[in-house]
Length: 99
Image (cartoon, rainbow, N blue to C red; front, side, top):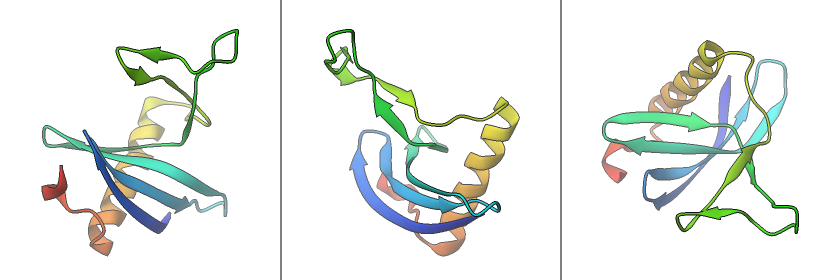
């Protein structure tokens, strides 16, 4: 797996977005990178949830998102997230002090 791009953006636990190329050649854009309370993780891209009236769903002042893609198991998701974080660290794109 290879991180092709990292775009820093700080908002709460969010520290940026990245583009990841998987071994299959699939390119996943807009993965979100988080750092909170010493824990770091990466989520695959999502899309805003819409209600029956096609309005964006907001709970507690936050837009709710649905996954655009997912993993077959929690272990596979964790392996993906850990590999992306390791790649970001190795490339010097991810600064733990940002969050």
